[in-house]
Amino acid sequence: MLFLRKNNMKKSEQKNFYRITLKPKGGFIKKSFRTLALPYHKGIKLIIAKRPGETTTKTQAAIFDKKIFTPGNAAAWVKEHITLLKNPCSKIANPKKKKHKAGRKKNPAPARQLSELYRTFHGADAKGRGELFLDIERGLIRLGNCDGVYYLSKKQGGKEKAYIHKFNWPFPDLYCNLAGNTLIIHGNFKIKKEGITG
Image (cartoon, rainbow, N blue to C red; front, side, top):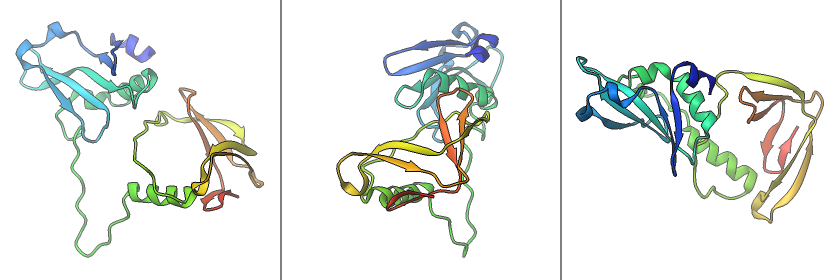
């Protein structure tokens, strides 16, 4: 939020989205406004327009879907993608996918790998897919060691139960992001059919 104030950006909240205004509407040509969806950045749309005397479009505001973003996530995204916002129609916003050379085997898509891991743990296919924005690009803070986790799950298609897993020594590391709203456990453990092991 401090980044927004320092750069004279304003945040507002609507029923289904958050809006971060980068520049006042008055500085743009009225008839040049349009909405730009970012296919590689789900849940985000940019309001772009041209300034008087300029031929390229600039970002006037960014719209964030409330189902995916929190106010803090939205502000962090703006800070981390300021170059994209300055050039909304460039290759930065819509990068081309790399072509695989003939005869080379493609790596399994991340979505398929995630589905397989879900099936291994839960014993059933996932009912759908979502996208979660994690504000971890600005770095992590180590909190200490984690000796165990307590969680609720419907493993292997059963009823929801409480599980406690005690990690083996050496205990994994426990980190949090700069916003303080995401915890990450990193260590020598695995997710298997029987649950968390290691």
